[in-house]
Image (cartoon, rainbow, N blue to C red; front, side):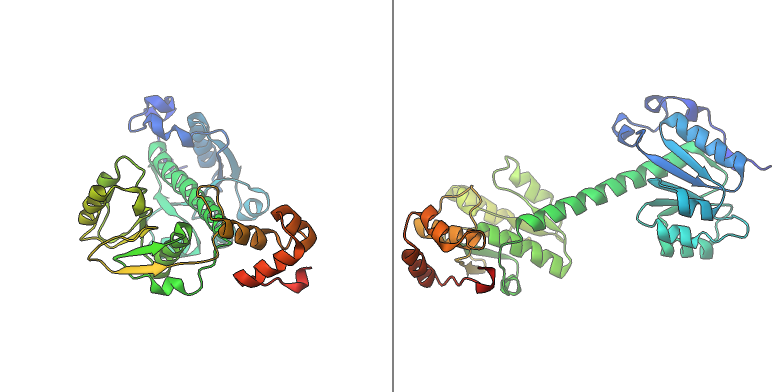
Length: 329
């Protein structure tokens, strides 16, 4: 039987002693990481599993596509492209959200292209050394982890900004520009929505960061640079900032008017949400409480919590233009 797995002395060494493996990569050498091997040649499958187990991974072996379809639950899939009488396409399609690496006998462009279209991430040509396979596994394990992190942060970001109403204001965004506003968080949401709309990468640089100048200098011309809370800088620092971004595609938000040669847009809103990081006026606080809690409490309770009568609550709704949805009473 042909040995499709090249022997290497290094593959049996501990992770921190193998050539080309840095300690920072040990995040992927976790007992929680399960690798599913789908290979009809039992000797090869056992050889791969043994070497991966020695590195620190858990493994499971299936010699047929049907068995893997029904019983596997790996994080990473190593699938042989040549299992007689069986199509691997349904398996790839089912687990395309996982990391899938195809093991091929030779470089077949049509086969590889079809597998990649179905959801595979990469391929490796037999025979291969375990170190070569390990590098691919680590690369895609890191990619999958980063992808999951990005999705989590995106969902959290959208959840935090879910109650902020943008209307059609995103259509007014046209960098480079400075935006004057009474609500920085609204501009935050507008800028992220604009970047998604135009399909551009967004670089957010907080001015509270000590190295904001260096970060600005390192941004790519293709990126949209978003800087918020310009009002926190002293006048001389504001001038330095405007010079640094002069040749960049930027959006700067501020709660105070700023003299600049750049296009300025003024966006004000009465729909501010209190986030605990700013001081609201009495009127702003009352508007916030009414909008936030009028669906949870009847007027008698809400007015009492605000410290005035139910009639006064009705008058303030009329004053602020707040209309209660009667279906929620």
